[in-house]
Amino acid sequence: MKAVIACILGCLILAISYSSASAADNFYLIGPGDVLEISVWNEPDLSKELIVPPDGVISFPLIKPIQVTNLTISALKKTVTKKLSEYIPDATVTVLLVEINSLKAYVIGKVKQAGEYPIDLKTSVLQILAKAGGLTPFASDGNIKILRQKNNKIINIPFDYGEVEKGKNLGQNIVLKAGDVVLVP
Image 1 (cartoon, one colour):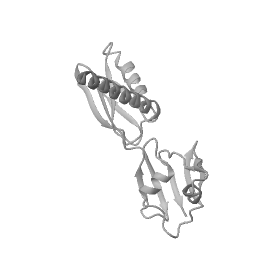
Image 2 (cartoon, rainbow, N blue to C red):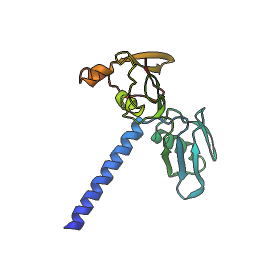
Image 3 (tube, one colour):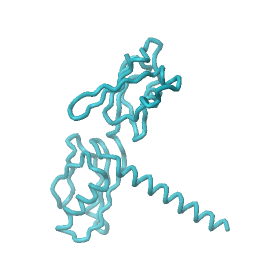
Image 4 (tube, rainbow, N blue to C red):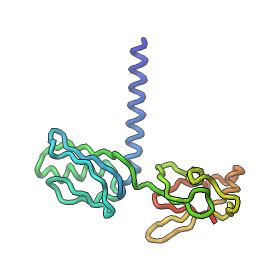
């Protein structure tokens, strides 16, 4: 009986982790600084760990350089497989995201520890303000702004810390995106 329960729990854990990995793969876009591992099954010379450079272009043996910025992991896998098919028909390519380094946001102004902070796909404004040690007593908590670059323009998203702290207007506690700047006047 214990073995059956352990087997069921193991299968559930695998299903949950597979589901989470698939969800992240569909939403996460590769960015500069990320560490990738690309390998081809049964081809030891075609295994490489690399850091995505600032221009987002990587090199891999046998194929032309690939622009990987803003691709998902599965899209990169398909691209590498297609480009390698000329040399290795039916190649089994694996692409792993070893380390995420491109997801960063910034907090500046009247917080205890302004700076650059790593974020994930669910980091909210309140969470990054907590990472920054919270507001100083001189901060204007009702006039916080999130500056986001979108289509080569900077958009200004207002955030009222005082309202959110009181449980009001919680929708303004948005999820941050890479490159967002939280400005606390």
